[in-house]
Image (cartoon, rainbow, N blue to C red):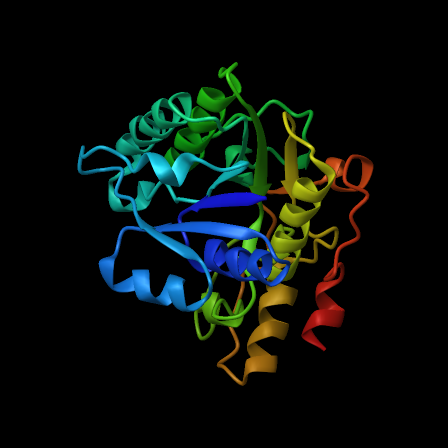
Length: 267
């Protein structure tokens, strides 16, 4: 089996290493020439793929059994409007290849904070630019008939190099301290992705969020204490919030979270 990973960032590179360790051939893309050697040293076949410069895309990269797309929309930096056109270039390249299976990484940011629970059956109503861009990308791939796409909506990402303690350490009067968190550890990001691949489950949407949703103030204060950082101070209020339930992880993948409880993880 050959898997191409478009975007070998924090998650993409970790996934690529895990797949290589399982004996799977991995093609990995980067926009940085300097990173090509890093990929090669990990046993990943490296490709320089830049969706923004208009140059022809390397056809060999898209010759694979599965394409996984893990590139952020960068809406906060002003590049959000370029995201869907970039992905249209990817779809055009897929159309010239033999690819029939795609995994698109999205985010639970497609759900607005409407003060309740949401799951895969809940129609997204994104109210942020990033959420709107991501949902537009999801819809673009759902419309395709030449290949099947499974969409993974990750919650907030934590793990090596992403210590949640650093998000709020030392800050004061942080709003919405009683709101529930919706996070997932890198180990489960990789585990869920590998389960989709192993079980050949394509054509569905999956929320990937740990089942434990403690209050923001409690979790981030505990995280700061564990890391020895200055404790944050939250306002004890509950404004807009949501709890993201990942029904498909259990019902379709029969996957059991490696980090199901954040208190146990922090202790």
